[in-house]
Length: 445
Image (cartoon, rainbow, N blue to C red; front, side, top):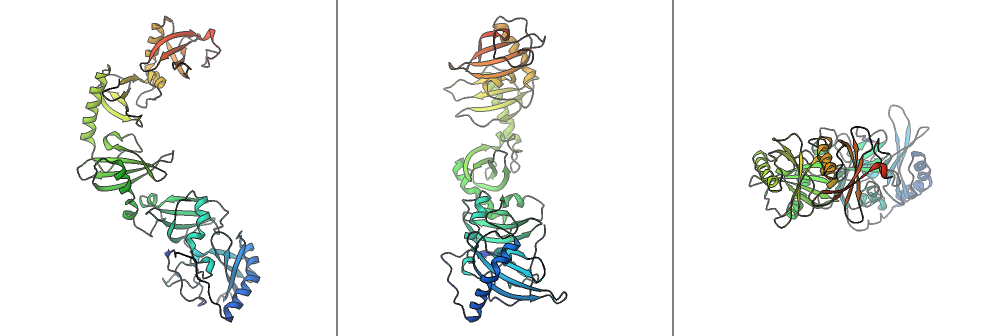
């Protein structure tokens, strides 16, 4: 992708737009035409609609003017140039070489300075093209940015099939907008946050505002987190597959936090010592000391809940109400555990990785299969002594609130369905798959 700058030497329009276009408020003032301008308008309305259609512009032309004719000094080819205003979306400057293929650029692109830095001689001047921010509205909506109110726009350039526009929105956010050539309102469009490009080495960069200006958005999220952080440094982390966006703040007191936002609004905050498993963890804050202290706390909480786990590392799950859910690797046992730690007035639970699946959590430090021996023990408690569990399937909750779990046996014979109470997770009954149509694991059908 490369910027395309049209340097046609035509002094046809007085006063070009700046490369970064500040968007005017209110309705544009109609141009009072002299006879020459009236003729340009008449010629444009007569000729430009057909030229627009030939370039791939899909809008209905509602206003047009003929800008003039440029003759290439080398090729002697004459090119007629027009400006058109559309019924929706951006306006365009059209180029119609005699005997050649017509082309179009949108008005934001047409405002790009010439190669020598001088203002463009082809800036759009029709009244309907005076507010490019308003004209961008349908393209922004297509790109999922219907809530963006543009305050400044700038052309970044074009590629083989796309045009790129930087948009600064009210409130401080900024985006690089990608629209299909030549920039029709009814074509596909997409956008990426300028903060993505601040952290990358690509040629694409946002320049209307700097990185610090965009990171100032974090102040509202830090305030909403209400954790007493006086920000020392800020970092945009990025978006997850679910669409949530994460930010990091290092605080003056040495602490650090990760902030989660959804749809541009604060959603959650995590201390950095609990955020190691979230989108790569914190980078601005040294969390080793805090993580060591937190591991010691989880060791004590596990012991209190009846599980002997000397916690060597941990990874938090999203908070569940007032409960702290965390996976723990233990230095004194080979399999991991998952702790669900509640407040002082509620009971806490620690699950092995097999029972964790029944409780709705999945281990990542070790495999659930490493803990199937605990399900085998549950079968023995239910009087089923001959099955060594080789696989399990959580079937779901019954109308009375118990959980049903199918088990397969390592000897290949039919397994069982175990029924558990919830909190505490205790086996209360078992039925053989030979007597049930609900079993689905291999060997149980």
